[in-house]
Image (cartoon, rainbow, N blue to C red; front, side, top):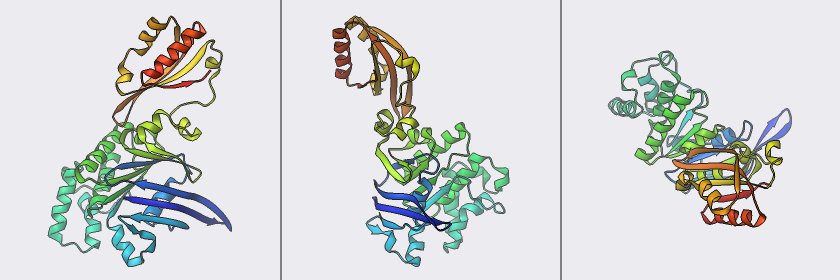
Length: 331
């Protein structure tokens, strides 16, 4: 388990103190994919760089496998970092070295024998799907292939923790999906804990078991991904998932009662609206809606207006709640 307690980071710029992280506390379970989501400037990169002490926290503790890494000296820190892999947004490959040489690089500087390096690199090339690119140089690779090399290099030292710093933000949507599938496969095969930071909602939604939302250096919300995306509580998260706190004018002008309903799992496939209208003598006017897949689960978000007698509207609203749906009365 990774346990972050009361972590703060202050930068000094032009004689001024800039608070990048403020009193962050998180727990990340072994073997899970944990997402850290936030807008640019929220403190995501500062946080992930504090976890391996590429940035020195100002206050707080970071405990990895029952060991507080803040207490490590420089020699101990170097040894610890060998078990923390990191993949980067811009790949950070050595342009003058082949795919094989880029993956082998951290093993060589660690003094691993050449025959072990050969076996390890061959296995990693197969894992990331680049066996035929062994002797290619980065200039001959696509963005997705470069990132696969970066992932293989991060795995070279057999880490127990993999950090991903906006690893897909420079890739097109199709390639992003392929990289996310690869990371999920690596997580399953190796039981590897992965921490992903991203401002891309679709990345967090697709791959992460749990998520923390950062805003201005603070954690404003944390929980299971499907819970955070289906009923976010903080304004910044609601904005991320497309839920407006102020009703659009076209909704505000509706008569009757306006309701938001969240459908989870099998409920997203049920003909709830048809049953509602037939059973309660109300008119339902659908105003907006969507169905999306969040961490493998179907989630529907529907806003509609109900018109009819007050008694029928009340009965129909209670019925919706009894179906296990999440209800929010907007008007």
